[in-house]
Length: 139
Image (cartoon, rainbow, N blue to C red; front, side, top):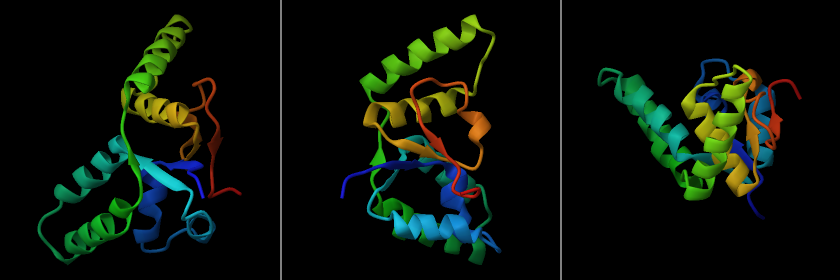
């Protein structure tokens, strides 16, 4: 199978929530051979974990990150992604929109690899052109 979906931080955090959304868990399992994430998402997940005090919770999070998330493809922000991102930032700035830089980078990675962004926060990506977004929580 080939890659189809780029998972955002909030989707990859779902399996470790006290009461995870079953729709998201089902979709992750259903598409496990078609999912990837971005280096920026990997950073966000690790940063959140490393800020925690050494504890059982942190140990559990590290185990999940390295044994589950770290095993999936983690795609880089490439030159092609940077070009598309610069073009989109310029276009959006002309219409008064300034989405967070990291969200633009994630969208650019999705565009460069022709993947669908999977996120719960659809509004983070709604202004970017030429990217497809899915919210597995509401499917």
